[in-house]
Image 1 (cartoon, rainbow, N blue to C red):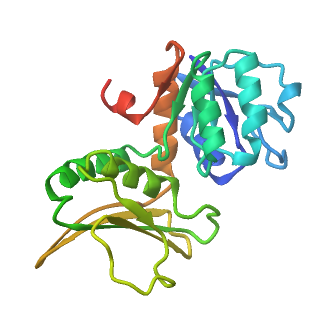
Image 2 (image 1 turned 120 degrees about the vertical axis):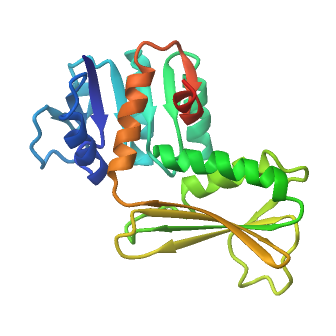
Image 3 (image 1 turned 180 degrees about the horizontal axis):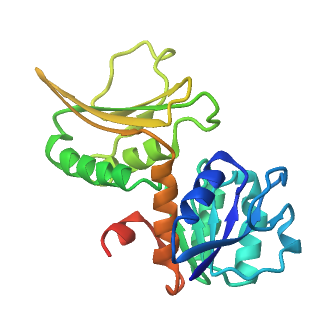
Length: 251
């Protein structure tokens, strides 16, 4: 049995993971962490991690970047493996996560969906073939409650594309103030926010007289919860290092 501390347990994703974990025979959420303890769970919820007297095997964080420092300090002080699923981290927080992986196992991915990570792999292959002759645009759509824009997944897709291009491309987020033609070495990244869209990502390769599009649509938040739980299973018993979806999918 793998015992999990779930950070952000009373948020929407936290409640999804709580439900999914209850259906697993080898996983159990033994404690939660959240700024609010208004929701009653089958496990104790701590608003301050310093009060937590339960030793989990793995931490899953699906909360908010504001909770990052206290969570990482808790994870390091108790040598607990950490699955970081929170999006919108700053570069300094990502750097801190990488530094922490020298001391504890850390799993970090901009998107916990297995399908999205397959899309990233397909996009990299397409970019190797098409990149020099096609304009590349990324469009991401999310619900109207999402704070960060563009999404971490859109940026991860752009980084993956750039990693295989012969000439590095510039990310362009807004063209309304740029009264000029699109340059060849651009990757346009566009964010749409509205309604209850769970998550959509489209990568458009626009060439002369042909367009190729690679898409992923999330129909529910369950796919992210399933990925986070798989990551927790994967991380259990691992040595300190920074792991990602490539390690999980390729295992």
